[in-house]
Every structure is written in C-alpha cells, then in structure tokens.
Length: 115
Length: 113
Image (cartoon, rainbow over all chains, first blue to last red; front, side, top):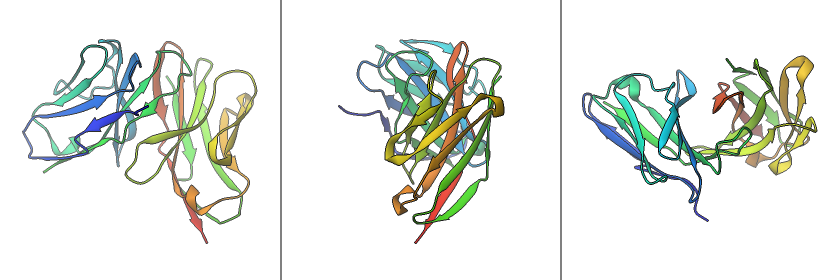
C-alpha cells in the first residue's frame, strides 16, 4: 500500500509568515510522529500522536509550533511567525501501534526555507 | 534520558571492503535500537532493529548489527560495500515509557570505486 506522504515537498516562506505542513500516515497506523532535521541539530523529535491526542509534545521548540491530528489520520504541523532558524526538513513518521520497538515508517519530508 | 553517539561523521570505503559504522548509546532503561538509512532527498528507511532476544540482528541489503550491552554499542557492519550503499546512516534509540526515537548525528558513507 501507499507509504507516508507529506506535502508540500518544498516550502519557501518569508520570515514572519505562518506555514502549515501536512502528513498523511499509512492507513490504519494509530501512532504518528513529527521530527525535524537540520544541519546544526540533526534529527530531533517534535511531537507524538496516539490517535488524535498528543501524549508527548516535549520536542516542540516554542509556542510558535503546534500540531493537530484529525480523524486519527492526517496531521498538520503549523509554525507561526516563522524565523530563519525554523529552516529545516520536517519529517513525519507513523507506526501501526504505539509500542516499544514498533517500526516507524518515514515520509519523504517537507523542506522548509525561511528567507 | 537517552542519547546516541555515532563515531565518525564521514566514513569512506572502497567498493568490496568491509563497512563498519559505530554507534554507542546511553539509556537508563532497556533500549530498543535501530539503524536507519537516508538516501539524498528521501526519508528514512529502516535497516534493522534490536528489541530483545538475539543480539546479532540481520537487516536488509546485507547489513547486520550486534548489540553489546557491556559496551553499550550497536555497531553496523556489512562484509562487502556496494556503490549503492552510499548514503547517510542514523543510529537511534528508544525505550521506557516513550516511543520517540532519539537519533545520533549520522554517518555519511562514501563508497569509492
């Protein structure tokens, strides 16, 4: 079946604008994760969803970042008032169940550039 | 807290040579360990994982890794490198009550003809 998809694949925005990044997990996967990959920080966890609730938001870097998940499926990561340090690749992953050792399947990512 | 250290940000090998990518972890709970590969402009693909049981784990594309608790290591090896193995490799750990992956900084593998 289809893998994890993310849109857009690339996004260029001006500093101060808001952006929305979308993730479509694999159908039937109950757990969804957002990570950020940047040159300076490597791969960092942002937030984890179990169904529509987010038990772990510990990786969100500031209150400008928020995420939601609806219908136990699609998730949107929103960054308000973007800053240049937000430039990174945002990766989404999903797993069948939230369980230790569960394989996380990653999407191709959204490359965000803030000018 | 958990952490991962990958020794060597860049490893270069000749085609046909042994590949050894090093990973050491720190975890206060029994760890679950993963190796992911990332090709340019693509997402991460799982190579292999260690959960419990056998400490030598075999993965895709001829890769394997050995979990050594005494050394807190989970090094990735492949007996004979292929040009198509050129990519960035990430070691990751999870464990305890959270399911998030904590990644190392990555090792870029170059394979020379």
